[in-house]
Image 1 (tube, rainbow, N blue to C red):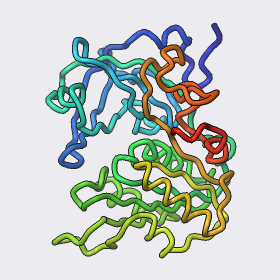
Image 2 (image 1 turned 45 degrees about the vertical axis):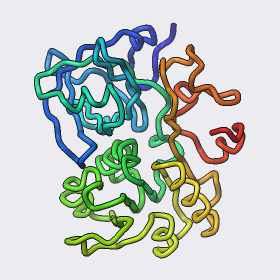
Image 3 (image 1 turned 90 degrees about the vertical axis):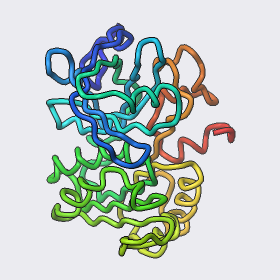
Image 4 (image 1 turned 60 degrees about the vertical axis):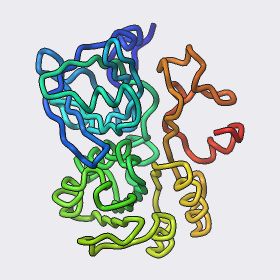
Amino acid sequence: MGECTCGGNHKSDMLIPMIGVITDIRTETPDVKTFRVVGRDGKKLFEHMPGQCAMVSVPGVGEAMFSITSSPTNKEFQEFSIKRCGSLTDVLHGMNPGDEITVRGPYGNAFPVETALKGENLLFIAGGIGLAPLRSVINYVLDNRENYGTVEILYGSRSADDLVQLEEIQQVWCKTDGVDVYLTIDREQEGWDGHVGFVPSYLKEIGFTTDKKVLVCGPPIMIKFVLAGLTEMGFTKEQIYTTLELRMKCGIGKCGRCNIGSKYVCKDGPVFRFDEIDELPPEY
């Protein structure tokens, strides 16, 4: 077998779970926690590129695919922001620093940060936990600032309490030169003096110029209306990238669970350009 170009692991090694030690757990929202993971040797488990995923497992409970939310430029650890929504995530949310899990990966393709996106102005649009896959890209871009143009980030959630990575957004992203951050929540909330309204409507209200590439991630209904809004504003589908992460199970295109048309999301995705999604059957 050949080498995986996004990390140097042999593909056969990607099937073997590595033991990961949780070194830190941050509570982001009432149902999202960010887990910092290293190997038993205290080092990063493997290399990855922004947008790739890994299979996280608690032996005896189950495993699932999650976005790697830390940037590849971080050489010390990897992070996963995980929403509590089932038996595996219930157990993960009950863990403490020092507990062990298993991790295998990296899986899937990445956002084209070294090719199609390099030298471009970038607009990131995220809703809720959809910020998780984009966080890796945003931090990669900020750590290689000279390789990219302007950076604009539009992020919204149900409430101020549901904004993921709020401290990093306010303390790092908002204070970086050449970066504009727009936050919004769905409904009025006591103590919130920022914008109120849904992401798609705020998108049109701001009226971004079309001289940029766009990266979108969030609930399917949000993506649908964001895409309609971007099209209305004059963006083409060739300018827009998103991730499809539903239904991934094995990570290597063998189980067929994530098959759609001629594609396997785990191998051909999870990152797709929107004109590529148009070629898929309408079930997605």
